[in-house]
Amino acid sequence: GLAGPSGKLISVSTNNPQAVTFTATVSVPAGKAMIRYTVSASPTKTQTSATLMVTATPGGSATATLTIVPVSLLSLTLSPTSVVAGSPFTGTVMLTGPAPKGGLVVNLKSDQKGVTVPASITLKEGTTAGTFSGGTILQSGATPITCTIQIQVVTPVGGTWLSAKLTVVPLMVVWATVEPTVVVGGQTSNLMI
Image (cartoon, rainbow, N blue to C red; front, side):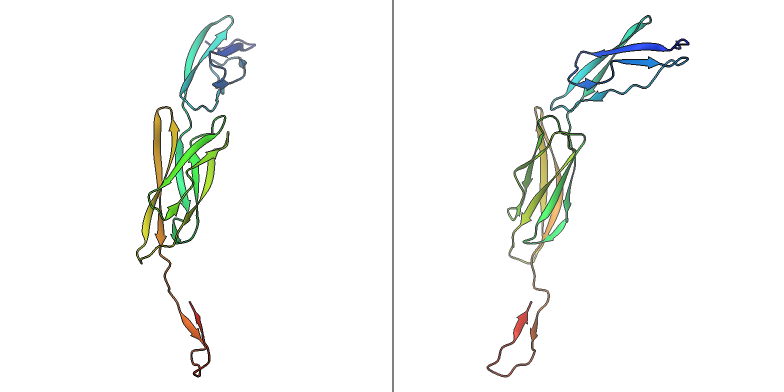
């Protein structure tokens, strides 16, 4: 029913105060049957739940259960996505929510020996993104290679890998000139490449 002329005071509690935070009492305004009430879920490393109990005196009580899942990987982006061999690149890891207490370790790997990434990075507690630096080495041949960079968060139930592609273009001579272009025997010229 609708709250009376002076409104209705509701008490809220939970069986899992580590998992959720909220204000312990809320007032339903006069003439209203329902209000929207914010419950904040704490970051977690494992799936958990919290039962919320609401009590109106007089008026009865009710419960609702909120399931809180751990943060997971949202995306991996590389900048730039194409580099000349020997050049660095940067990766950005995005999460679906804030990293939990103690931070979150993200594993990294490359499928090409000529492309290096750190074995892992740790995103600090409360952050939703992190970056890492990668490198490439000079390679022989004139064909670009495509490398897959992968990231993973390991959870108690395993981990899912996300990936992004990096193209590594060989360093090639694309321009050459001599200065001066004409010399007398015994003199020197500069080759610029």
